[in-house]
Image 1 (cartoon, rainbow over the protein chains, first blue to last red):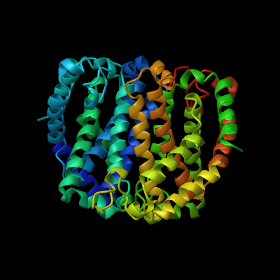
Image 2: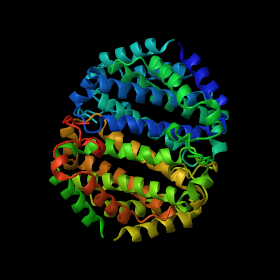
Image 3: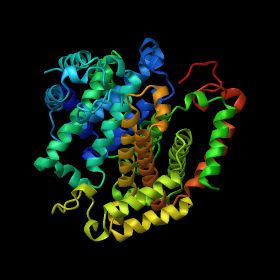
Length: 124
Length: 124
Length: 124
Length: 124
């Protein structure tokens, strides 16, 4: 299944329930915030290692699957309502980031591209 | 381009910069939160109508494209690290929601499925 | 009761449960994100008018009270752990904003201070 | 300075700029989301230890002070608009949590109160 096909499913789902009235971009951004909040709650008290190990437990996987699905569904719906091609804009952004973050300068440094030329090698 | 191919691009992008060390699920959820925050900032003071009209201005489109791309890229990366098939779990969730929200009961009502059987017709 | 006293209550609450180990700034920011997500869920489908009217219903008030409390408690705890005087830094920020947003220039315009000098009168 | 006095300052600040029209609860929740997103960006790539050490660097302190101030200011404004006594509802919530999380049962366990009676000792 493609993102476009998923988008049609979600759009049809909303249309059949007369929920299009609620799906303004503003409202959908808030719904997305709610779902990212639920995703955060899964990981908030975990160590970095525990956050990675979660996929190896059935209960963990199932929570993670459900929340990632919810975040993705609202994102897909938001993109639909705003008439944005999600995969295309993401691909364009990766191309831009390839130029902003040259591999040799950015290696091992989690800094913003605007700070890459400073000597600061610390994370953050 | 498919979500899988995008996922490979992003994974390769991180690998070449030695950024895999930063990409724990926990950290990626926080990065996703940051991007959803930026998306929120675009819409925070807009009326519902203005939030929809934003796609008709060039400046609006370009901001929206960039933030949706950022949200999607971190989501795609998070799904990759957690070994989740984003499109498959989203499709499964739509199927579940089809059962949870029967069209005739849910029509025009923005309530949670657990409250569908109450007579409460108010939104929220 | 003052913010300082509340901070002591929360700190004592965490200490008695041996929860200090979980309360790193990073984890507390994620917990704050979770609570802001729950706050968002209350308002996501409401019109601007409904969002204001919520305080007039008992059910609405009680949900809003609880979520505002949760957000505030994690914020207070985070400030404690980071050794930040919340009221003092907020007051300093208002003073800074007084200078950044001169009343005559900013009147009725929801734009960022860096854009105040442009002729752009549109919101956002 | 008290929270009430800060609330008056912020209210006066908004009134003098004719910004009350933008300050619906819905809009303020989105503004709060934006600020929590900026707070998240400070901490997203940091290890738990680095997240705690940030208060010892001048640059770190100043970023943290500013973002905590912004989050607090929008929270204070939101509470004002919704007519909620922030400190009172937070104190009441701590009292409720004292009952929900008995110290002996909750010790060292980051689980939700509804799961306290299960034998599950894992975090999360």
